[in-house]
Amino acid sequence: MKARTSAIVIALFTISVFAGCSGSPQSGLPASNGIPISSPSHAQAGVRSFRGARPFSSESVLYSFANAPDGANAWGSLINVNGTLYGTTITGGTNNVGTVFSVSTTGAEHVIYSFGGGTDGADPYGGLVKVGSKLYGTTAFGGSNNNGTVYSVTTGGVEHVLYRFLGDGTDGVTPYAPLTNVNGTLYGTTDHGGSQFNGTIFSVTTSGTYTSLHDFAGFPSDGAHSYAGFTNVAGVLYGATTAGGASDEGTIYTYTPGGSVHVLYSFAGGSDGARPYACCVKIGKALYGTTASGGKNDGTVFKITIATGAEKVLYRFLGDSDGADPYAGLTNLSGTLYGVTQEQGASGNGTIFSIVPGGAYTKLHDFAATPDAATSYATMLDVNGTLYGTSFAGGTAGDGSVFTFTP
Image (spheres, rainbow, N blue to C red):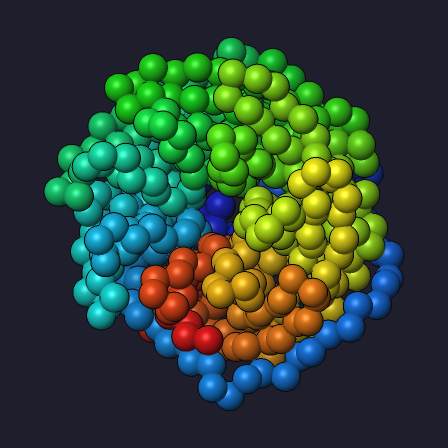
């Protein structure tokens, strides 16, 4: 199990190396280890930017992971439960296949559960959602035939597997995305599996009743390979795929429980962006999000009008001091959107940035690696005006961190 997990970790650090290579329309499909390799277009289009760091912004590491028996390599976002933050790491813990942890806003961390890597699951990428008194999440591996699980865990550390993916074509495989609660039913996506092996949409009740809802059809249809959790807008779920759609560069789509999937926008892979790994935040009548590639090859911030599906690029990352390849979504704080890039910036370890709906972009912080955070894939969480995030690397031991940022 350690060998497989190590391969995943190495692959995550090599994404950016491969992301600059051109390829066929299928080159964006996940590699054998489940981590997709981007193939961005080389369109060049200028967008006005404001890239000076603001001196009154403040970033600090709240907690540094230390691998075993602690967690390591946090990928998913945090949730706030009565002032305590909960999250997951994809490695570390007693068996080096991930943990569920809590951390206070003063930095006291506690490992709630260490995954075993067998039937209980392994590698929880997606973070958590709270329903009732329990936390719910997914693991990308472990379970039946190493295809992933849906699980619950109490804050006291009692874990229960609700569903183990079969990988036989009737359900999904490798759920990287977090779950979304809609009236007590949990909705999620898988990266692979389904009848066409392009991934699925599923639901599962808190008692464990699983339903496969949609099989993605890939290119040139409705999308393929989802890493993104849903955004719930008045009962309509908005999601993202990293491939498929009209140009095989990913989609933003809607799914109505009990209904069907509708593609709101298909990315073209050029100046408009490509390969969204997170979905969107809603402000007014529009959705705002990021793509990990496209634009000037290093990703974009975009706006999509909900009623018409019209897309507008607000910012194209330059891939130098401003950051590159944003995998995380955006966080709305008083009408300004905040996000992270997972590489580049002054030290090559990613950045924190802000952008207003009108398009003015400001770089706010350069991650500096050890002992600072580095390589963040997680959407930041707003807790009373302070943003909390996780990083895959950096921190005192280089195993990732929980960091805070005050605009």
